[in-house]
Length: 197
Image (tube, rainbow, N blue to C red; front, side, top):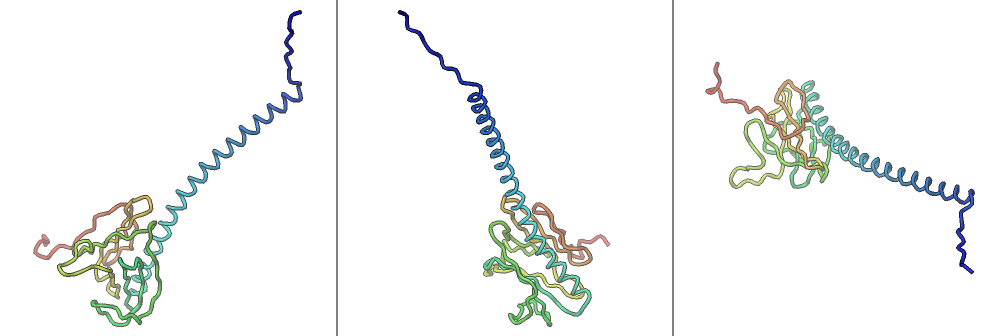
């Protein structure tokens, strides 16, 4: 007697169920893959919008100080603190370039962090917070606005969370404050002896 082998075949309903299970697993895999891509894209966009929002808030503070100073006799200062990682927009009555009394009105404040970093300030007269004068330690940079415009123009260099530099450019008169990508060059006013006229 020869051994007979029995081959079991799946019935049609069982094959159909197995096929549906494979289809369902495939669909779930595709959904999981698309969801992970969407999450990565969203986190990248939200990081950039965080930086843009914080930077635009600082630009608006500069522009607000300049606009209000032009329309009134009030004076304003924006103080960028390297040590406290904050910025403050203050209104004050009397211009004193040596310091602003602490009791002067605070209009707006903001903070710097790892996703919105303050690097340095370069004024348009050549003063650079990266290279302080001998015996001096730079803890803050200040921009003063009065009826005639800004005391000094310059740029504030910031870094986003991806390590990209951005510049807020402050012009002494006439032109609005701008947020520009990169560490841009600023125009340094020339001494009269170097001017052709």
